[in-house]
Length: 86
Image (cartoon, rainbow, N blue to C red; front, side, top):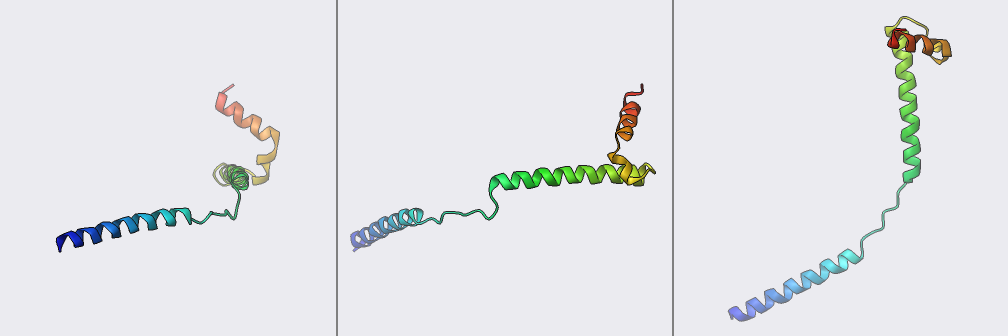
């Protein structure tokens, strides 16, 4: 009787293995809503926007200047001169 039980368990284990293999074959292919190249572009745009907004905030609020002055070349040459102490 124990032999039948072991035989029964062996067949069920084999069936389980077969079911796992068939499940692996039936895996769904993942379709991305946003392609990877578009994700990279979005991240770069958000990074640039955050740098610009951070510079505007730092210059206007903490530095006491005008936020729109951050886009002028003279502002950046002044900042570089301050950093380099020339």
